[in-house]
Length: 155
Image 1 (spheres, helix red, strand yellow):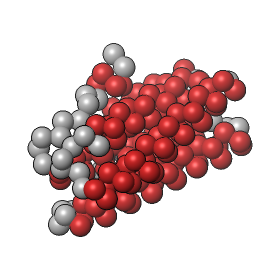
Image 2 (tube, rainbow, N blue to C red):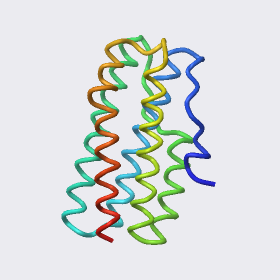
Image 3 (cartoon, rainbow, N blue to C red):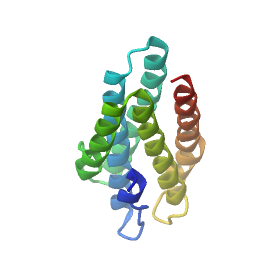
């Protein structure tokens, strides 16, 4: 069973706070996954690329936290079960080597891309959020997938 099988597509029927919490937890877990993989990969150019991708996820975390506050909610600071699954998957991949760890990152990025695309279909996501998803987050996810693919080919 792959990580994407364990992390089902997001259901957007429980209200926009649920949507924001889901994507926020996903972005927090992505940030944590990059930390894990960076501790495994010791090649300098790879580290710099990974740091750049992690920074994109940190910025996404801050955006979604702000959006949650705007709605009057207290944003989560934990990836909760989502993060536990990702940590387990990446941790297992790390044991198998850099390539498997990078493949785990790629799967996470692909899953994130799928979530963002699903969010665009939700009536509970604001126009501002949809603009950010379209102009920043989806392009970042695609760029991350391409970058991780390039790193995998270097292995």
